[in-house]
Image (tube, rainbow, N blue to C red; front, top):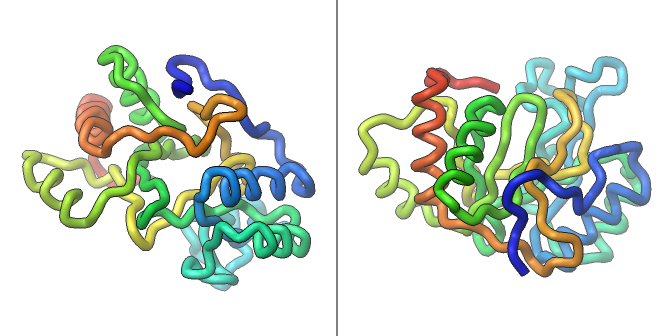
Length: 221
């Protein structure tokens, strides 16, 4: 079954009021797609732009692991149910790398341009996760050696381009974070098995080109 090209279709709603929707999404990721997940640190209810973690200057409020830590990520249905039964509004965090998807993320404007460029090339895309500030293009797992060789071959790599490989993480829909809702910009077809993913090389080429054209070279949250 092919992935969607063009307008996004929603496998999981981006509306988020916690409860059954989040636990259902987490179980889909963990048990059907075999993506290791864990609950993230929720936004601070007293200030949505702040995080519930101890860091008062957290740059990714509500969108990172805290308790439990990243190493606890699992595909076990019983653990996933227990976590979200106790924390029904917790964001869903994917532990990237290993056999799980990796990701290339970039600022939202450049992400939009990168996807448009890939569409013009006729490139097949897998899921794309979007927040109000950044988009993450999910890709096949890659090694640090593979990534290093890829980047070494380039004359310039913008600092706002980020890589989520082994030891990294990405918040997944329909999470609510301190910077807003997470949704699918490109979603797998309903009922699909573990989503197809592109290789990292083609995605990086388009991302670097998009960032160069938009002039976004400095790190951006």
